[in-house]
Amino acid sequence: MKNIKVNIAGREYPVNVTPETATAMQKAAEMVNKQASQFQSAYAISDARDILAMCALQLAYQNIEHIETQTGPVEAKLAAIELVLDNANT
Image (cartoon, rainbow, N blue to C red; front, side, top):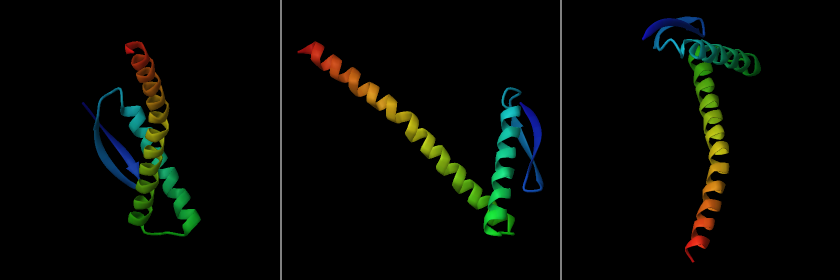
C-alpha cells in the first residue's frame, strides 16, 4: 500500500492506495473538485458540506446509471442464451 494525499474542496486527505490505483484516485479527486466548482457556480452554494453532498449525490447517481446501462445488455444476452438452451432441451 501507498499513502497519497488528495485535495478535495481545499482540504487534504490522506488515502491508502495500491500503486496501480494512485493515478485513478487522483483523477477521482479532480472530478469531485470539478463537480464541486460547477455546483458552486450554478447554485451559488458557499457551504463546502452542501457542495460535497451534492457531488456525492450526483456521482452516486452516475454510478447507478452506469451500472444499469451495463447490466441491460448482459441481461438481454442471458435471456437469449436461456432461450437457446430451452429450445435445445425440447
